[in-house]
Length: 403
Image (tube, rainbow, N blue to C red):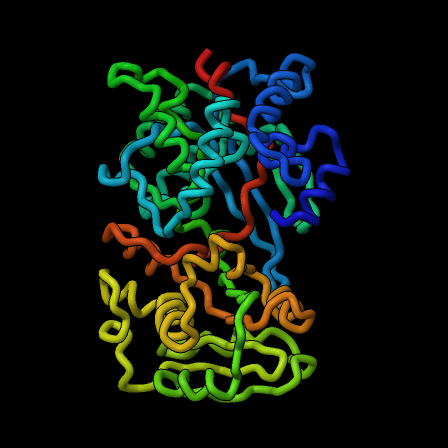
């Protein structure tokens, strides 16, 4: 989350989970030591209460699509045993940054708890899971609330032992894609290696808290992740000339104020890679020219599917080849930013907080699944599964997990 939202959450409650997950003061170093102390204090004082029985949880989120349609997504919250990626049970689909993993590992070592869930997606073509989960809805929800983004949340316990065992049996045979939380999963995996022996199956540190959603769930929504370039000396005319070597470049409008409604839908029907480039001097539609073959032009190891993704074409042909920028270095330095919201991207350019924005289409679930199954990874921040699962709702505490 950004600094503005963090400050707002900190001001709202002295017990917001942001106090555990992030630095509170500007420049605070080794914040994980304070987090561990605060976490222990909250448990002692009763701010956080352990569930008296071992159970799974069902988390239902209802939210409105841009079209206005109200849809619902259902997740199962459980502890999943950490396994190496080469084992094939858990599959990543995006690249991660070492710095982020390092900070999360220090927090996990200090607190020995997961304050949020790793978002996992699994296939359930035979519809085995819904009948087992639906029994929870016969009882009133344990929690029910709305958040500031307009998402309605309901949480149920799934405490019937037979149902738990049946679900565990079914899910044990599934493969999971990490939809959101790559850094958290890799951190938990590293932590599990540090402290576990082969016989320590019951050690809580071998597990990570996850929220599992069926790939067939009608509420599984993937948004695009737009790119904002903050610090770049952009010579527009020269840049357009370079882009024309790879793309059909069309000026859509010169003044950002001319933008009327979202641009994203105009990309949906295009067969070749396409995106909008938005600057303060004009917004352009870039469409990969016929005859330009990204699987040949993009010199990276990987499948044709990976190289022909819109985000791959953007990173390699536009940012690297035409602008001379390294998106990985820029992202770590904070000079390449990301947002799923087109209006935020447009406002950042108009307000001078970004020199240029690139508006993309969302990645498709078929592409994500195929790339993950092939052992490949898309660029960092290639997908945004909406909405997120909130932090702090269910905390997986190693101290009480299996007691």
